[in-house]
Length: 216
Ligand code: SAM
Image (cartoon, rainbow, N blue to C red; front, top):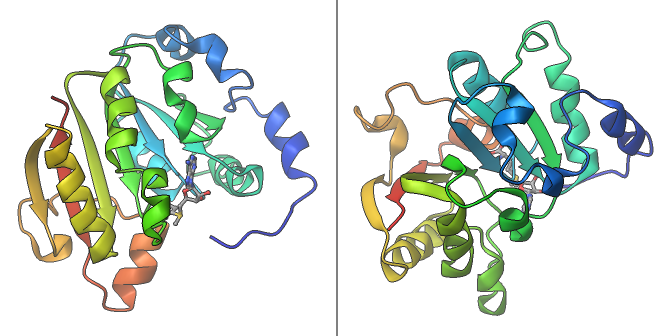
């Protein structure tokens, strides 16, 4: 994602009610953040928040945490939250952090589901560990997911998708479902909420890949 440096991003984000300023202080206490014991779903690499906000609107009985590395991108999600369509949602929080530190922010078994949408491909082999579906990242997710917790991953990048299928197997996770053409898969596409990148790439005619993996 190409970014401009937006000077006002930091201030706006810091002041916003949905943004968790010291996320590591909430480790093990996310139900208190939301004021209920509903399950917690997180999206890592949320971008401008389209998927997360629409999911939160559709599933009010689930608490959603959107994780994004860049304040300039997170600002867009916060601005979208502030629109009339989403500003009534009380089941959404945002965190600005690198997903590498996810275990410092969520306690063991605190998260029910992790969404990864159109994650950066890191095409060079020497950067494979940075891919959000690498065995290294799956090991981090394993620590925070409940038993039977899931990772749902969508991408139009078939190379990254094939790598991810291998990594899921290598990590000993259970591959519950997968498809190389989500939008034409009757079962898996049911209730699909499109991300910003998904809209962009499927409009160009790119098929969308999706896998659902179960924590071992
Ligand atoms: N998920 C959105 C979508 O599908 O429209 C955005 C996809 S964009 C290609 C990937 C996003 O993930 C970027 O906003 C990037 O900053 C974020 N990201 C990549 N690696 C990350 C990491 N390690 N921790 C947190 N965010 C990350």
